[in-house]
Amino acid sequence: MNEKWSLDALYTGFDTAEFAADMEALKALCAECGTFAASVGNGEPAETIRGYLQLSEKIQTLGSRILIYAMLRQSANTADGEARTQMGRVMAMMSEMAPAEAAVKGYIAGLADLDALIEQDALLQEYAYYLGNIKKGAKHLLSPNEEGIMARMGLSGANAWEQLWETLTSTVQVSYRGGTETLPGIRNLAYSADAAVRKEAYEAELNCYPKIQDGAAFALNSIKLETVNECKIRGYESALDRSLKQAHMKKETLDALLSAMEDYLPEFWRYLKAKGKALGHENGLPWYDLFAPMGGSGKTYTTEEARDYLLRIFGGFDQELHDMIARAFDDAWIDFFPREGKVGGAFCCELYPVKQSRVLTNFGGEFGDIVTLAHELGHAFHNEMLFSHGILNLDLPMPLAETASTFNENVLVSEAIAASTDPQEKLALIESQLMDACQIICDIYSRFLFEKSVIERRESEFMSAETLCAMMNEAQKKAYGDGITEETLHPYMWLCKSHYYRGSLSYYNFPYAFGGLFARSLYAMYREEGAAFVPKYKKLLNATTVMDAEEAAAICGVDLTDKAFWARGLESFKQEIDEFVELLEQ
Image (cartoon, one colour):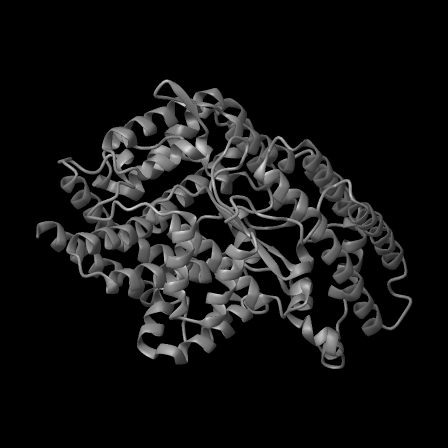
């Protein structure tokens, strides 16, 4: 089986005739965009909108093909200078279209009879939600010239700072037991069955961060200041207001979610203390044992075994999902193992032009790595459900982006628990699920509190690495309570998480809690309804880019603004914590 993904479906190299031809074609399309914008207002409105949509489809299809290829090359090897150069070329080319885009969108937003025009044209009907969002977002648009300036400045601003962070974290050497490790490699050791390895790896990880903390702090401060300033310029109430609008989600939904999470935090502290006591710690769980495996599941897996495990579990859920997973393994969609220069963590990227996905992970062979694969392949399945839309209808809002991924996790772990007859194995499986749940509740809450604090302070203060560490500690104390021993908190979580370093995307934390609890409730519905639920689930996934979050959820009869809905999912975790404690006592 392959160890690395294949990108040949996109291109076989930057030096190929196909790549060169596509770059020239994209350049011509970008120039055509400017010409088109200059003619806006001279023709019939419906024809103007249709022309804009058709041209945008061509640009997005070709531009995404080139940009994704370069981005995936760079993610797999941050030392790939050619990938970085080509990413810069495409981003610069696309940024030049910003004034034209702003002019056309301003024209569309100003049409008083837009709804009537949409009703009369099939292509406009397909993009009704997209066009409606253009009209709603018009008040945050700047003049065409200003949009062009903002786009060009972003290339040497937030985008450049993000690339610096990627380089720092992917190339830093971690001293460990007389040798060196990559940062993703050392972080993977947190899942080791050896207590000494976990503790030493945690200490080695913390000791490596001072080497890169100042550069990362400058990157974070710069990105967040750009965020604060841009939100002000565009007329958003705050960065959170912009994130909620980007997510097509109501503030009432977020408030209901966070309030329910706060109510149930003590239950997760109870879980952490019980785990700590079982591991020999009397006053809470040390951070370095947060991911310690428990029970009798000390098994490790090869990638072939991981594939077979996933196919067996998901074959019982849906044949289409099963077949896509098989394709992902057979057709080299996955880059599996950590190595020097490769970015940490895991992600899934849709390749719309070829109707495929690619998954990057840092596979270590633990059960949690299979769960990670299930999560990322859930994103890939979500992509499959969206490929029937036109490319302009692929803007997946953050909260709903985690629906299929966390649903997959629920299917995988719950089915494994149900099939287990060994109490020690059952303990391991339940603990694995609670460990992940603790991440989407406690850890995500700490990340939300931290980012909110950083953004609020950034306008008037530059935060040093030491200050950022202190702020992270405070956020973790509130989120983890007495469940984690205070002296072993992780002050550098601001440095190792990529989500903080995206200039155009703030608060990429609460969507994980949203997705986890939303998927938990959807899974409960599946358990109740069986196979009849699956078509409704697929319809929901298909709707996530063409409806607001609350409307899409309503397909399954869910009211996202109701705190009781979120409490339902949290209550199911409470029951699982009860079972976990009972198994420990046995």
